[in-house]
Image (cartoon, rainbow, N blue to C red):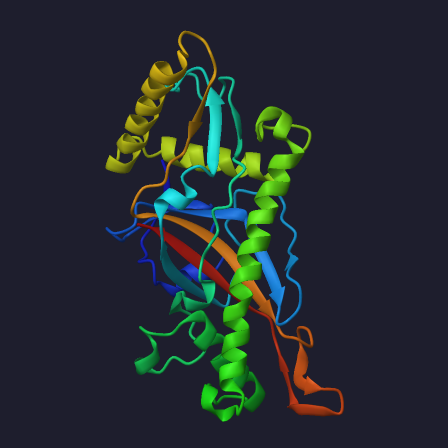
Length: 303
């Protein structure tokens, strides 16, 4: 069975690493949450983004400073995960022959800076708890760290410039997330981006696809699980009609997302001078208090 967490999506416990990256919540608007572990990216403010390392694991993302949520179109992500099999009854799963992977898609076009922070706010005053974007939260955190407690953005004369700088990072974040997916596919294009599990490459995307499939198959008694199986049957029928695939032929199936599904990614903003260094320029620092990397687990809620 899928892991059940007695939390709502805005519970601050979700800032901390979970024991699994596929879980259900006590929230009727959420079918499940899947933390897509390879999508763990850091960006330096006004510097080219860099990637964090990832090791194969069933754990969720490491702890984050805050969580945020934003609506995205399920259609944008529904060709991302795929697997190839000649049997979707899964009677012999996981022992049956299946290859797992991701498609050659550019699915990320997300306004991360506009995602609404739902736990871990830099300023926890009541008036900010329901309307704080990542961009606003980040600049308030800068103010809090520099002053040692005053989490208000209007202490900066260049507040608009700072916010615009964070918003402008959305394009590079999306570009680099999509590039990671394309690079993986290009490496394994000779097998259509799919591999058996496990394989000698310890491919992170193969692992993630299998983890998502495992999670959905553990939920087949739920409405969402039944919808998943119905969708696979429809894909099988479509393949039969369109391509004449019958008998023992292996067929490619997509794990199509549906409204209420949540795909989680992790992004982190590293201060321009680096983690643990005061703001400003050498010889003209804004005080002695250091700025630190601020990370967000962003829940992409499918609509």
